[in-house]
Image 1 (cartoon, rainbow, N blue to C red):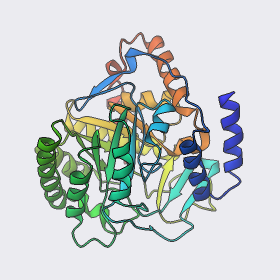
Image 2 (image 1 turned 45 degrees about the vertical axis):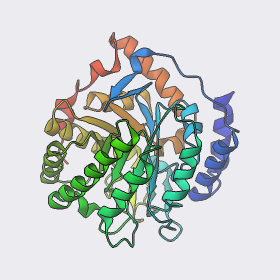
Image 3 (image 1 turned 135 degrees about the vertical axis):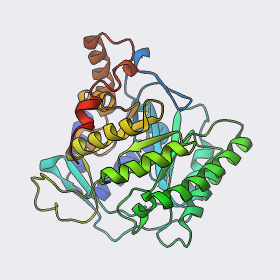
Length: 363
């Protein structure tokens, strides 16, 4: 029944422009209209990553719940963790509309939202009001477009959310804030990580618990750029990487109507590139650093392939636009079946099984 209802709801949402449809889906989750999903209680799917015990490896990526409106409703869909944001110190409207485009033939999305969000204060108030033991919620932090000191904006995010976040993601890889990706350059990245991780050390003392920090990178880095990111990640006490954000590439798209729109592309066409970059980063950082794989995940096979390419955890977002809110539960049931087939005692046993295959791909 849930699958049929979600299919009907998705068909209705596709009659609306993408941003209106997104707003309505958040409102539906907030109202409780969407029921919880039944997911397998499979201990083989649990993972301890960066000191956190995740009940399963599947998370909702940042970008859907920008203002921390519905993290617990997302967890009830079956996700093992939910990431809210990107949130900036001051509220900002983002770029002009229209700024989200569905490429239905490609099962892709292009967006140029530009970190539209209600700011730190609003998101913090919502997270402070939820039960701390209600599930794992990460906070994705960014910088305001007009900021005079972007590094200070990230530090402010650590300071503001240290009492309510289970982990942080430092987002320097959105293509929709001019100059933001420049922070991935080695000297800029060093200065950013120095400041953010110093703020984290102070926040850990105040919070009395660990506060893992992940760095979210773009899929459009060169091999040399990946070298630089890996070197800085390993020289700092960073907890992990998220690979990857949206891409500027438009290679192989069938939908020519929207392919020329500016912004970052996500969804099914991103799978190959993001998985190759994931494997290349795993090769560079070694087995110890946590990696969350994101980009084009629409099935249990996709999720497991991210793990085989080197991911400890997996996130999705855009593919749920096409697959509906039942997707997380379907993926988790599928993963249990795949582990049965592989005879694996845990999903972690399959990590890196196809690392060589994906790391050899040309960018």
